[in-house]
Image 1 (cartoon, rainbow, N blue to C red):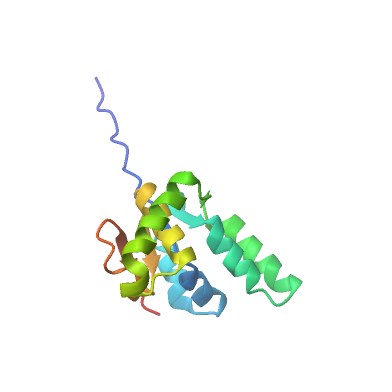
Image 2 (spheres, rainbow, N blue to C red):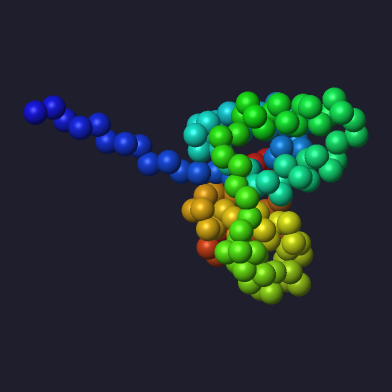
Length: 139
């Protein structure tokens, strides 16, 4: 009998908006950081996409954002009731002490609930969330 191939465990990474903003600003380190994560492990919250769209100044920029997401992100994760409830708890614990804001709490809650690491350069808002795995990006 032949040996069965062991399936490699997928370690999801959800990208925070700041990493993608660095990419769109032309920072090669951001693209390298993203590419270092295997395609099937790359995730982004739909809230992050909304933040990127909100920052677009033209239809050309919007087209670039949509193209990037379609070509470089495998999973778009949408918040649900469980994410909202977890985000509320995170805000109760970290809004005052760590300046955690609503969208960041939603993205962190998503990462926790899908068992993903959060890729971010914005460590200060997330560092005290003990159940959150962080993959630090240094621009």
